[in-house]
Length: 366
Image 1 (cartoon, rainbow, N blue to C red):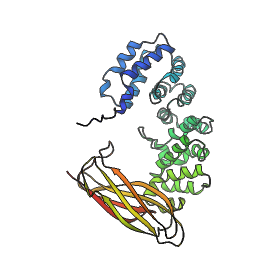
Image 2: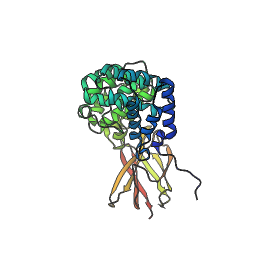
Image 3: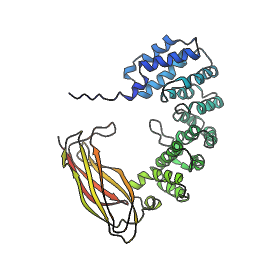
Image 4: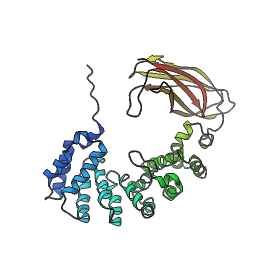
């Protein structure tokens, strides 16, 4: 029997021990807090709840046992935020604002701005965008200029059209220009935390309006490494798709002048849970140095027997004239929450500057 233990489920961030911690810290900032009532409510059917349902349950239970006005409750919760021992857990506080603060817009916006420094208010602010889009977006534009990196990041992350774990913002998804004033001041932000959000926001947009993103980035100066980093990560899906404009922006728009040698995937047959290694050598046939964006795609077998290709980044490099470089990548083939594997032949394709230059593959056995 294996001695390895499975990692605890993500929802266990809100386990019994954590709920006791929240109750204890609430008593510290509000001595009359009904800990027993709070714990009774939060534990009802806890095992069956997902992580986001548990987060909501904490928020709802706080509201149920606090005999205070919304304004008074926020004063208590502001004191609670720095005492909580998990950044993710603090997100129950913005959830409280989204659930009970719609009638006090200014107070709620200020609370979201405060709470985001402890975890994030990215999910909560989206409810205000739904209810009062123009007013909320105007506040978020001011946040993009805030000296605090957490607040600047909230402006970008909260307005992402396709934020994971949240509903889509249909208006921004339909017209990305609406949030452009938020992104523009952040395109050379000093904070990697903010730059990653901007890149993810733009990557979201590439799924609906790729030409809009390409035109935007073509108007940027990529001499600044901060801006160049955002551009590279914003265009990652378009680069994987071999989009010529995206590759050109990365300096790899030209056809690769290389010969592919010894392309292979080993072992040729595996069982689920094993690993395969892709290896090959690229030999330059060019008279000058060239920039190469190297990816690989795997044709995953689906339940129907058809295949669906997933492209992975491998490396970006400059290959000198006449030079060669051996490359390899090991990949673990295991079950994921986002992908179920099926037996059969899985082709593996080498992509250089968006062009397929060779293929190999492996079999997953029953």
